[in-house]
Image (cartoon, rainbow, N blue to C red; front, side, top):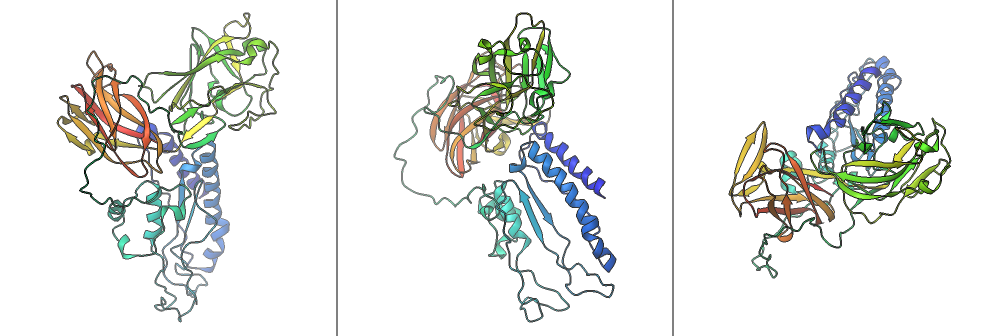
Length: 515
């Protein structure tokens, strides 16, 4: 039924929203709809008005949800048909599983508008693939479709593809990731060994931390420029004030947020649903319908990778409202339509876009509203909408420590979490086959614990080149995981990342690459 299909897709939506808690960056879900046998004429007539229409309606709702959540470009929906048996009609005026093996693929990055595969011609016993009673040997294996989807999901080496598709080598007409998608990574070519010595050996490590490691100048991160990285209807957490409608701060309408201030400082924290790393280039605030005295006029914008990471300041300053005591107001209930380049021209807003060169990428944001327009504003903060124009970074992949190559140290498990315990200076963990996508700017985030009283030091190399020494601050306990990042440049395809201990006695749980 339509209801059951809607329910199945909405169950998937709930699972997608929980991906950060489940610590996954790839998901595969299966939805099954029965009753497509159509062995009789009546069944066949009901196909489009009944089952087909129900499936279409449920898909439409799910697609709209994905687009509203900013997830459409990261989703592929594959329809796999009933199996095929015979093209001949049966005595009941229906078919016996005719025209099986058809697929359609939809998604924001699907390279669409075309049909792949060969239609049998002539459609008769004269065709070489005809084996009697309306039965054809397929010309395109199902492995073709999954080969392209697997590449899009990041499985690019022949060895890995052969492992997940054991019959792949039996066919020559496989679809590639770029056949199916516009943003699939290039397949990884095998690397031939060489006996030539390295011309520029890696310099010896130094024990001096580099503070905030980064490559200078920082290369441009790749992704999509958006009107706001916050994401419509993302979770909002007020601080220093109490609000029952905090969600309206990012609902893409002029419905106002109202926050009763009970301490200082006050503002909001945003945890975007899309869970993509992002780089903020500006900040916009839309006025509410209420008196201007409640408008925020000064701000501090900060970012972090997750709830265990420290907040890092991105920018601070004043809105131009600070010199305009009577800015225009926005009536409630109107939609806000903006872009990266501009706020909604039909609405009243203030904007600071003076940090387009910011390259620090984060997953969560904190906006402290330092001052309000009027001294008589009492203890209330009000505004209609907040936007953070910026860049959504392309994708992320996490590599668990226990799956990597290690020298020295020991792998332990505590409360179900495997991690690498670094026992001595010189111990290292090497993450091989780290997918750098199409190459360019990338961010490496190490999940660690340090239950000592001073920083631990970790030298990080990428493809044999030292990019910096990370100072890992103490964590609250040995089981309180934190994250520290380093920005660098990754090569196309596979990269080798090594972390070598310049201090002893700390733990590494995983490394995530954002690209």
